[in-house]
Image (cartoon, rainbow, N blue to C red; front, side, top):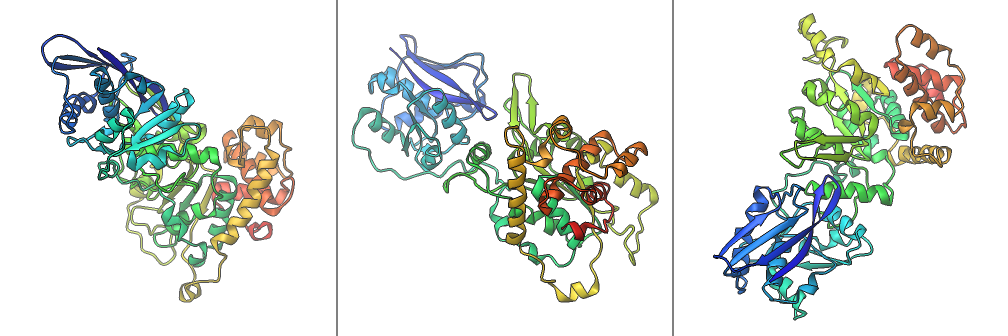
Amino acid sequence: MMASAWSVALVGLDGQIVEVEADIGGGLPRTVLVGLPDTALYEARDRCKAAVSNSAVAWPASLLTINLSPATLPKTGSHYDLAIVAAVLGAADQFAASELADTVLLGELGLDGRVRGVRGILPATLAAAQRGFRRVIVPRTQAVEAQLVDDIEVFGVASLRQLLALLRHDPIPDEDELRADDSAEPDRTSDVRSRSLDLADVAGQAEAKWALEVAAAGRHHIFFHGPPGVGKTMLAERLPGLLPDLGVADALEVSAIHSLAGVELDSGLIMRPPYADPHHSASMPAVIGGGPRMAKPGAISRAHRGVLFMDEAPEFSSGVLEAMRTPLESGVVFLTRSQMQTRYPARFQLVLAANPCPCGKFGTPGADCRCPPMAIRRYGQKLSDPIRDRIDISQTFRPPRRTRVRAGLDGGESSATVAGRVAEARDRQARRLAGSQWRCNGEVDGPYLRRHLPLPDGLDAVDDALDRRLLSPRGVDKVLRVAWTVADLAGVDRPLAEHVAVALAMRRGEPSPSWRAVS
């Protein structure tokens, strides 16, 4: 007496089909679960047995062996419960075992037989559809999320009784619903807050707003530094509002990451660029990703195709900051554990913010900084040269003038107006980079930048900075990328000397007298 059901093991965003086999033998009554389950999955034996008994169905009173194949793949999570119960009851002739063919089952069971929501429904459903399964059975509260995947039939069940009725082709009984996994940590990666924030609310800081516009147009990393209270955080929070909507492919990938992180997708795909702002006390797994056995996505992956804002950047641990070096360049993060390697996309736009010293007053006119010189030096060195070298734009904030403070608002442009210019610049980049793997100037690698795009005019200043060791070879590429973005915003087909001058000043964090002219 044997039957098989199907589920999905998620390794990052990649799903592997798992066959759940149930065999009812003639030995003493006990349940054996094999196939490298973790603790939560190993406890499924007791959860499933109680759920079956409380649903007025008999659990097999003999030796029951449940195998999760492939046996060499570590399996984690509670979403295998539905597949385990289906395989067991199929082996017990509660319904025709053939009903389980071409069907993937995902969901956790409560002791009363109700089906609870789980993480990762979207990527698991994607994996099932890509491997040719024709239907998927999920918790009813997450059926909308599973229906975001085309070419697969989705059935939502609220209880084990409903699952049995579906497999027996009986009328579906009514059941109360359980919400999706309440144990999921709240995800701060959201576009809801950024929608209500307008760039016009920020008084003054016209040059910083221009730098933010350039960063948005070319997807450049940017570093804000200046005394407290001058608007660094306010501008960073308004960056997502300047970015265009995600394409369908990107939205599907971003939504899959958020599904794995525990975010409910009741309203459909995430179409706006996400925004993540981890606290400076966040650990390495929280920011980069990690966890025991099966690594989970961190803030850099939840900010994929969006914005990662690290306020008080020098207060982050050096290990967290240095671990971002490779993802900043490659757009992916590999998390290696003893049993497997997990890959998550992490092509985010980084915004760093820092004060000039621990007290924040060093170098500020009229302020009294009491930090010892060594403390100021140590504070500045917390952002290492390799990290700084990966930042495209460095923008210094200065205290606003008294008249601007009194006025409150200086009649600046709205986010919608700036977003329109950003969209036009992005369109120019898309046309220029058509046929390549790149979408924005900030993503183009050095060889393509130098071989396939015409070099701009006015590179003497860049060569001089390189000779004086004020720029690294990577820094030269950064300047060229920013120059192309400035030219795109100006509506010209090739960067001019003034665009290169502005890009060089933005790279080095120097005030540029010509930025108003090119804007």
